[in-house]
Image (tube, rainbow, N blue to C red; front, side):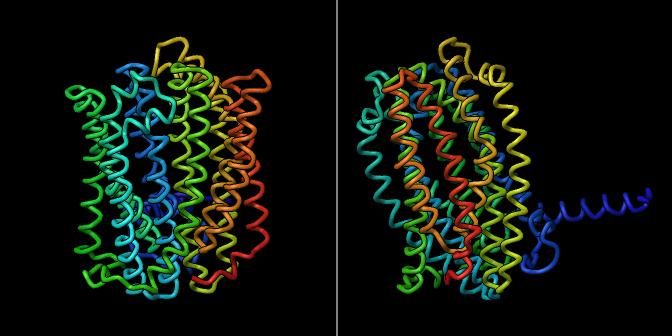
Length: 466
């Protein structure tokens, strides 16, 4: 029989663990209770990406007041700038895998050195991306199928966003370094600062500067987050302590990071490329209203996907650190436990998307055509959320083990060999139009989840050396 005293003690213990998770106290994730380890990592990771997802929705809310052209501009720009996110996430994935493995091996200095080399590589890559995006901003929007009016009004937004590529990449990368070290709370705080500044500045800057104000607010917020990260990397008292010597090029470490990051980056390029194709297909088939409605649905998708992605990031850290400590079974058990939690969460989101699409989309637009497209998109996309939850955990677990090539192959097959052809066929040959493009999304994500689960259970990731 459970007594009042035992319930109170259990509640106190839960509060202590929650406080520890939010404060970021050092913890050995290769020992002790697996549910506790998952909780300590997942809570700050979920909160980290939750505020980012809140900003995505808030941003769309204020941009939506500027009209369908502004919504389309933001959506089309961000569909292309996901290529920048792909580079950032690729480097972040590699950094998390290497740093986590070194931490598991009890080599914090080597972990910091790997992080420094990843940052050095990021700065070099970003120069190329930023210059290209700023010079060809208008052409990028035109290539995405934007109307002349959208290009004329939105080119400055695109130019500013690409000009801020460095802070986008560094924010993701350095948070990947913190997560690999098990300091999920620091990653949470830095993204909170970035998103918090965004949320405060976004309505103010949009009021004074129009659409370009949204871009200025985003870059300013990201910059604040990066400054906070750098302070704690160089002046903080955490497990990782950076010095300038870690930024002296080390060919062997750079080769390791490049070896891991290019497949990881490419797997997200594959995903981004597929999204770009779908968004262009929707814009061409349904026009500006369909494009705007789908962008609102996609923003809401990100609002709920990012917390689930945060939970998946915990899988990457636990797998990496436990492989470093030679605790293979513990790594595997951790992944399946996180997958279970994600399925429960995504099941609730499915209900929300399917049954409450209209009131949600109504928050962002009153245009009847945009509203109808948005509702349809939310309901169709929501049908596959449970599979999204499983797939992202398995993919991140493989990445955390340093097996970045298998997820790349899975993404290539699932998105480019299945989703894109299916979307095109359903759109053009069946008369479904925009609906066909939407159906291809949950279909592909479900297939990817099943394939990723198969390869994780196969167990080849257990033998990867980083």
